[in-house]
Length: 172
Image (cartoon, rainbow, N blue to C red; front, top):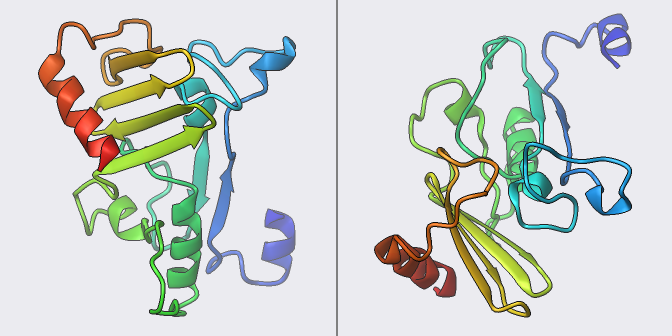
């Protein structure tokens, strides 16, 4: 792809995005997402934490490692902004143009909260905290992802304040 863009003379002004929509298919028994828990069709980090590589010469500094969570929904809004196009104003878009966050123009997190749902399972990430609920299994788990990316230490029984906050946010 890069060779073709260079041959066409547009490699210096093209936004390139490489990513994945979810974790690997660990349910197949052929692979694992270790050290992350879960995989495809799961709301654990192994199913939702995926690589995202963006190349945008002259706009995003090469080698940048961005730590705040973003969503695949952001790719659309980012591409529209890169094309200097505008979106119809008669609807709401969940994604955001993440370039201002990546180039340092905006130092806040792009999303105060992110949400996932897959059947009876749902999850919410707010800052370093993640709430996971499985309605069928009657399971509620709370993790501090900054300290426990592998989701091995449920904090729901020892941090009732944070559990209540995130549960309320998810219901809203």
